[in-house]
Amino acid sequence: MSRKMLQVPVATLVLLTLLPIADVAAAAAAAADATAATAASTAASTAASTASTGIDASLKNAKLIEAKLLPDLAILQRVNQEDEKWQQVYRFIDDGFPVLELYGYKPKADLPYTLIVPKIDVRSIEKPRLKEFMLEHVVPGKIFDSYNGNGNSKEEEESFGNGNGHKIVFRKLEKSHNNVWLLNGQQILHKLRINENLMAIAIDGYLGDRKSPYSKRNIQETNNRYNDPQPLEQPNITNAHAKVEPVIKESKASPLMSFLANMKTGTKVFQHFLSKSNLTRIMDDNAYTVLIPSDNAFQRWHPIDWGFYPFSVPEFTESVLRNHFLPMQRPLRLADVRNMDEVVVTTMGGEDVVFHGQPTPTVNNVSIMSDYNLSNGNQVFIISEVLFVTEAVVSKLHQMHKDKETPPLLAFPWFGAQFLSHSFLALERDPRFTQITRYLNSAEIAPHISGANYTFFVPEDRAFEKLGFDKLSDEVMASQRGVKMLLNHFVKGRLYNRDLRDNEVFETIGGGHIKITRNPGSNYTSVNNAQITESEVFVYNLGTMYYLDDILYSHMLRDFVSKSTKTRSNRHGSDSGGGSRSTSRPSDVEIVPNEFEGEHNGGDYAIHGDDEDFEDEIITPKALPVQIYELPK
Image 1 (cartoon, rainbow, N blue to C red):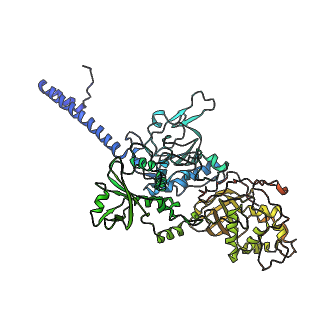
Image 2: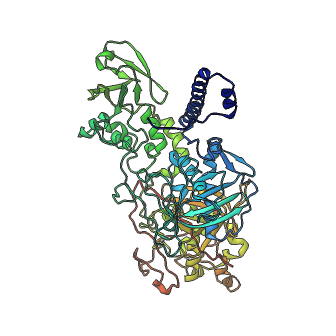
Image 3: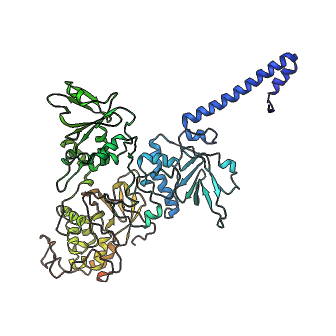
């Protein structure tokens, strides 16, 4: 029997000295039982706390983690705006903290806090995982002033956890001559003291489960985001940056996916959408009936040549899929339907479907074409239409997602430049843009703006008139400097209004840079010297236009304003004061190939872009901000 010291309180010892020997043993045993009971109670309480919240109660900041607290950023002084290190911190805060606030996290004044700034773009994280990702990179209740052992002891460091309750561990890289330190296995790049209560530590990577990435796409690191060209993503791309393993995996536990995989025809569209949805292992362990629309049912909503396909909107597609799954205590068989006059079932999405057995089996008046029993006993009905999709629903959805509409293929004015051609035709119909259409008609920029996936900042006529640019001849517009100025109004990549963040900088096709200024609490948004007058004018799924009240990089042609005495003429030499413009190409003009570079025609700049052929269902990545820029004087 091993010896253990029994710790008894002093008051108990005094009491023991006053008792007879026979009673001493009994009292000691009672005291021991009380001590053991207290320890057991404490352990049980700790275990219960850990079990209920998932947070290790031994962490010094466990209560702060459970309290869902954030640092108070209302008085945050945004210094060093042009420093990339600080920009990275501000982007981490601006892109991630609003999500935590949606989940009930509240700011608290004078709360010590450490931000672990990952080397990736927070906006690339899938929304369902963004909360988990952000919590992995915040540490409430502690400022890590030092991680070299001077300011924080090892025991103290390892007793603090991040927002997910995972311990923060610093380690010095062995055999390191450069004093390299790791934070939870990720190299520390630098640290920034934001204010007296807030510290930021930048790491070369991100924290979390490496086997389960936060994004369906491979997470792009910050350096790649800013410096590398981002190609168009197309449905048939199979490289590591585009295609990922479906959420619903083919396995023994997924008899539905096994069934769909074995179906040679008729259900491939449903299988495709289901594999890309967030409906993981749908009710495989429960009883359900699934209604699968045939491929022809989906095809009825696909535009013949061009138009809007409702299932190009992922959120809508997933809601439709949910309304084709029927949770039931016992799967509904076709024989049951035939023997019932009417049966009403609520779908996973909350809608009601009505089955009728006579004269033929139907659901919501849609024919049931065939039925199958899955290996786990669940039921499949193949139906002839997609439920809960009507012309009215699609029309409303179309108004909300014009950016996903596919365009007709244009052979005029510029066959190889679909975005530019459709933009030109749209602007030509608007009386506010007679000058920019004349400009586009004069300057040969189609080789630079080939294909799709662009953002076009379009000056209105008043912008030309106030600078006297409406008096410039077509020859000036078509000059080398004129072409370069026009190209500085285009950005490679589609920008939405949400992407125009304050102090964000983008590189233009012309080699210049544009800086976004956005005043908080107002609708005022400017691009360099110009104010945006109308946002998100979608040119089908090819790109986006923004209308401006000024011309960008106008200094490039100001010297020509006083010298211009010629009457404007169109490309055929006739007066164009109020007449129509022609976009036909004269026979003596050489067609420039798509491989056009800046040195062509003696240019002093280079144009770099992707020359992928346009396809109907392009996934257009956002334009990418730049790090180093020089704004026009």
